[in-house]
Length: 414
Image (cartoon, rainbow, N blue to C red; front, side):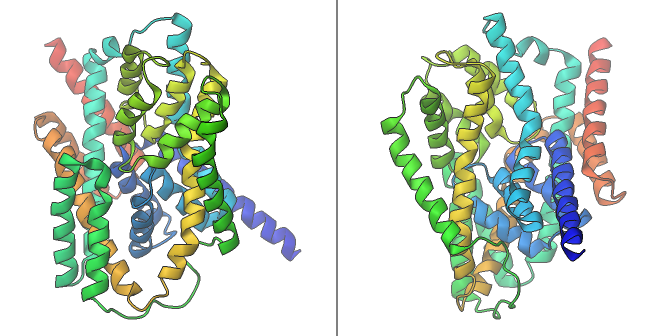
């Protein structure tokens, strides 16, 4: 009987992980940083899977890894809640909606043998207004996350100074070298470790559970695939396609907005014409979920291969490094947490996460929103619904999209 109860509990946890992340995969618009705001609201405030300190630690861990930060945070949250299968289900549910949309768009372009992009749709007032409404909702979600994280993680003058320093570093780095956003976190962790001795971390369950043996196997597999795939794979075959996107997922720091131009140079016009690439680029901005699912579009329209299988291979290729890197790094992270100054380092990382999110809220979110009075009004309403009415994020997102669409359609009509 105890075994049966454990099995039922595991299935319930897996189902919970899948359902929650599927809902986020359908409603998390706004890019990687906005996704972190959605995650915090869902899993810290509503589901109470973890507290702000643990959430900031996971964000810090994933932010120093190459690949899609928000997807990696989701993988870690699924792992923390329901083990290895939970991490896969979290990724599958969060990724599937946008992957299906972008893959289907690519297959449609291929079938039509046309380079026509979504420009004609984007020119429709209602569609443009919906996108503005979604951006306003994302701004409100991120602002709430920054304020709440600040209240819980910035509790001393040192942490306030670290958050302010990370804010300034992140603003400068994002403008001139977005691939190096992790420098803000590195600086915060070092400052916290040097100046804040803190107290020893409480003994108990680790943040994430991955054995050293599993970590070594994952790390070795990652290095082997990254080094050997380009040598043994036929560039025009499925293994070559996987190798191309595996490299992209392994070498890009800074999230989805950085990987898109990197993919343009990596794939090249010989496989995906420039006009088709930018059609997919535009579509990727209009779908929820991780921007790395742009790989499904590129696989679908790939000239040597193309089709649904190529879309799946490209998608798996770009996300596979994240699973291997997380499994490889978690045991090392767990060991570092036992060091004498780990408490101060983690406090500094948490404060730096607040500064990093605040910087991204200012630029590009707030600076873009400032040019749109209607967007500001929608964002304020969304903020009221999230912060005071305590509504879940997903109905607020849809309400903002509807409001933006109706407003632009009305203005166009008159």
